[in-house]
Image 1 (cartoon, protein in one colour):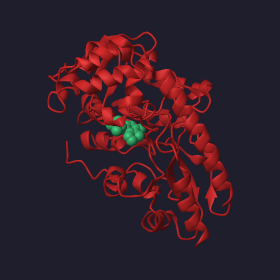
Image 2 (cartoon, helix red, strand yellow):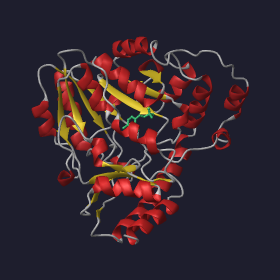
Image 3 (cartoon, protein in one colour):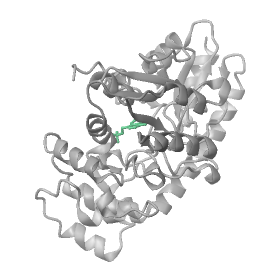
Image 4 (cartoon, helix red, strand yellow):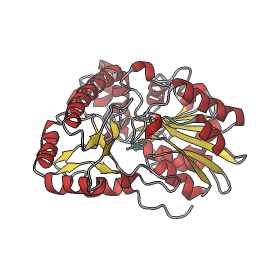
Length: 377
Ligand SMILES: Cc1ncc(COP(=O)(O)O)c(C=O)c1O
């Protein structure tokens, strides 16, 4: 594999995430304190927490945690689950396990950069399928069909999507699964925002449930708001694939942090409480953002996304979105992500967009600083 390029978004976050006063583009829901999380624990988990020893843990993940994760899928068991240090490690290993030189991959664009960068670095044979605003950001199955080649080994999608917030229509998702199944292609499905749908009827089934070569990526970071745990996982019924990735993990994190395994188990058992809270927060914030953008119709095009906790809004000002975002963070401490951070090597990305987040508590001071900037121009 060639040396990986700069991860534009993460590099930008390294510079600004903990410097900017108002993080208005967070991709995770509001987090919890240890006390809040532990208050969800039953007596057995509370005791497990108090008696926890800090040795190494199993590379696959603690059996009890794999059981609880498997419970979040229809028809899967612990044998179908391999845990990772966050979603990023899972994505990295999955692409290395699924692709080699000469293989071809299909990836939706725009995307969370590593979903594109990894296949490009591994095989160099990657075709983008555009999510277009004029098509409600929906993927077009005809585009996907046209992108497939005899040597296509993986199709990679992400719904709810980062950055657009789109969820594929149920029928479209089924068509994607069928196209993959027809040719035995693995479907890599990044489902890290699942659970944060605005309308529960839009929640998609998980790829690993639908298809034996479905590879579902998930994590505690996003919908559950617990990125500090660094617990992610891949669910798949392709056990040979899981075994290949487990061997890679020996060169990476080796195993999870023991405290994180216990805490992730507690959170997943209490998942309905956590997801209800986070969905309510997103709904509240979307109302506030809707009212905010409605006050500046000459500057922004906005519509609430299908799900997740980020959206890709349009900026129409003459100065352009890059300059707009730069001045907002430098002058008012309001952090947004301009479209350039979502540039793709595969396809053009709309360059008048910026990512805004709505999963965190207390967005009013950020909106006030943003308004202050706009009104002071
Ligand atoms: C779509 C998507 N996948 C994967 C990741 C990586 O998640 P983690 O921080 O849990 O490794 C992110 C993080 O922003 C993401 O947005």
